[in-house]
Image (tube, rainbow, N blue to C red; front, side, top):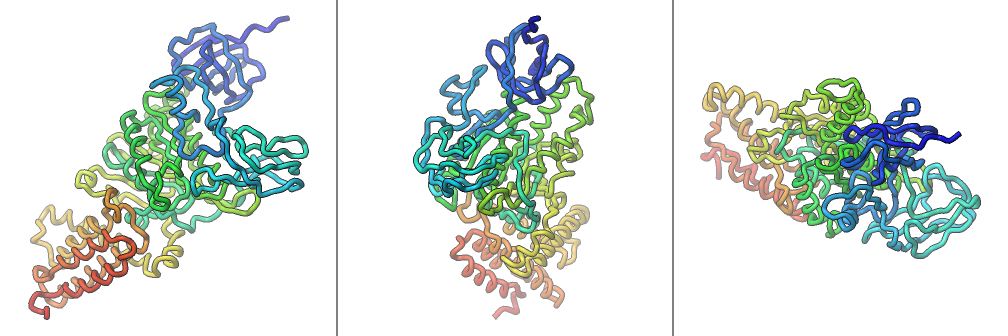
Length: 584
């Protein structure tokens, strides 16, 4: 008895049905049609399999053959990832462009890592060593000054039979175990499967972003999660570029998920020009980019976020601190909605699938700081900073709400603040952080014991400022008492000088925690001193805040080496906050 050949029976956009199917597992990959388009099984019903195709299905016909590969969607992890620009399936875009032109051709298959490049490997173990998943076999220099630790793949155990030093390609064995298992510089990993870790660690260490408003008011812990929510034109991409350049992370993974082609082209052009302030070289030396523009297949967009976080987990497993930027999860959710509609699934709110919240939660749970498996003992972290683009800036829409349920911090960007040239355009009334108490001890120990008090005073000032501006809008600022008008003056100083930053100023694009603290502390001391003068009978019109403002701006723009001198000058300027007739 002969078995009927496997053939396509139905094509619906990016979805394909085929039968008869036997012995196939969920999420298994297949080559579809004569063009051998890459696809993935997402539903099995009897002898019928439903597959989502990661490429354009134009021209695909019923009756064409398909073949299953026996593996799931995986990425090759190893040296050579840093500096690469990958599509949502892990294919290097520069190699694809050389082979297929400006648009990706059907069935294009390109390895993630260059199979011809040789790496100088130095083992740290010898024959006879007992190893298990996560153990460091040896090291190599992936980029100048960046040590790449070659790991035993998770799930592999045994005794090393041989391990050699020398130059190897990523696919060549550098050694083997006594059972014959080869040891290579790279290994494959399924992108939908979280990489295992040891013990999870607490959120007591902040990720220093270099942005004053985040570090002071809305900090994020290493291994934490942040939702950057804002409408069009609020500066989400600029924020993420600033974080990629200045955040205290060893590795940056940037996911451009469903963004406009011209915007991603700008990002691809700008990132290589950014200079890493720590090394003086291009920021790309410690960056991996995953790019899936809005005109690329929608199911590849859905896979791109899993590819990005798998790469981030790989560098975390080496013991590095990784910052993962996902821009934006709204486009990823739209891909889920489109796929769900083609599958005729029961829609949830606004047409999104009912499992949107659980998928988002599972994705966010892959962030974290942990004691890692394997030897030597080490720690690593993946900090997830994801952008969400709600229509019209409406935080009540489903993607924003599902994100807020699982994110540890909200950095809400406001269009009005962006139009006022306030950068970052963060709405401090809406934003919050659940990591404030967890990181408080670190800031008080490493920066200043008064850190929390100054933070609370700054927030109180901004809140009072918002209340007074509403009142002033009704009755006019002249009707306010002098002490209330002082609040408006100092709050404006805080917004513009303390919290506002220029992404293009060499000394203001990033702010060390100590500079951030001194700026906020001096602003609060100026308010307190001026309020004392007013309560003693001095009218506000006679108090001169101009010299102090100029010294505070000079402190804001000062290089790190001049911080102490500029702080002394600003403290001296505080004495100038006196009535004109009282000055010597």
